[in-house]
Length: 232
Image (cartoon, rainbow, N blue to C red; front, side, top):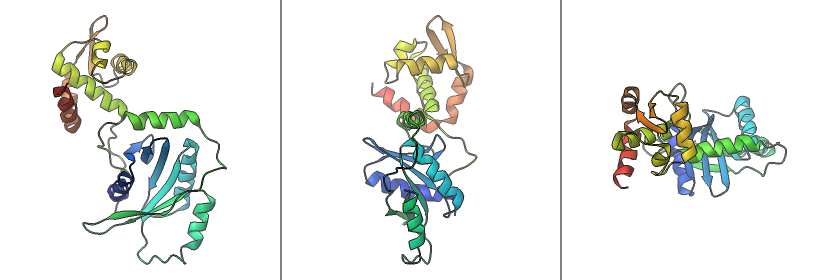
């Protein structure tokens, strides 16, 4: 069993509750939003002191934090009472994942208490929410390690590249007309982290050969954005 096996059931549970769910957002395994409500869920194969320490640190984001672990095979509520007491004291929530062949599901065992003992970090909360809200397509898998994470910045660069592929040389203002923030477009073009773009002349950009080749690494995103462009 891998930590990533816990993600699909947790995602289904949260989506059924009306949350927008993304994985691997600014070092958090799972983030979920509904209105002003922000949840952070850390996925692990078992409860441990390092997991609890990590979860408590996430409370600085101003989020309700849950730990999600496989449901113990011989789970008995009375025997688990001390653990639940500790989680309540730490103001953390608990999600059990029942890993059944073909029918895995997650259940909320404990909702976190309103946290009072943690100093919030508004800057990091804003950073987390910006990254969460910048995601369009969920291609990441919560709980994975040593795999490429598709960030909001990556999505933005892929969309810009798709626009330039379809329409040719354009200005940041023209590109932003296709549902992108103009400042974000300008930063992506000028920063050019992936080396996908080049300036043809002042204020006009095009796609490099590296950019055309780079799009091949993101077929799902390319298909998604090309579909959107066909409908505009």
